[in-house]
Length: 174
Image (cartoon, rainbow, N blue to C red):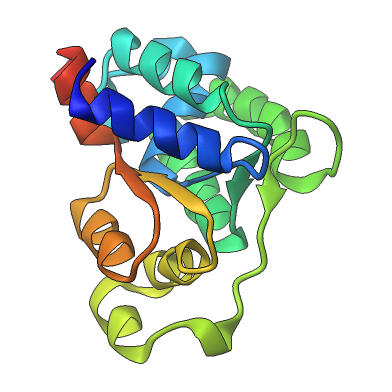
C-alpha cells in the first residue's frame, strides 16, 4: 500500500462521519459525472475523463455527507451554466436545484463560513471562496480540492486536505 493510500485511509477514518468538504472544480466533476457525463472533457472539465469521475465518486462515497459552502455552490452553479447551454442547461439546473437548495437526503450540506474567521491575507491571495474553505478546514473539516494554492493554504493552516491531482496521479488518470 502506497503512502498516499495510507494517508487517504487515515483521513477517511478520521472524517467519514462528519463528511467531506468539496471545492468547486471537484464538485463540478462529481456532479457532471453523475448527472450529465457527456459533458466530461468539455470546457472547465476538459482535463478530466470518465476514470476521474469514478475516482471521485468512489472516494466521496466513503463519507456520510458531502459538505460545501454557499460560495462554492454559487461558483459551481455559475460554472455549470457556462459548460452547457440550451435545454441541457435547463435540465441540469432542475436537477441541481434540490441538491443545492433543499435540505433532504442526498443534498449537499452547506457549512456556514464565519467572515471573522477568514484571514485577510488569505482573502487577498485566494479570494473569498478559498479563504472561507481554509477557515473551515482549520475547524477540523477535511477538504478535497484540485486547486494547488488552496491545498497548500489548507495544509499550511494545519488543516486536513487532499489534492485530487495527487489522487489522479496515483491512479494513473493524469
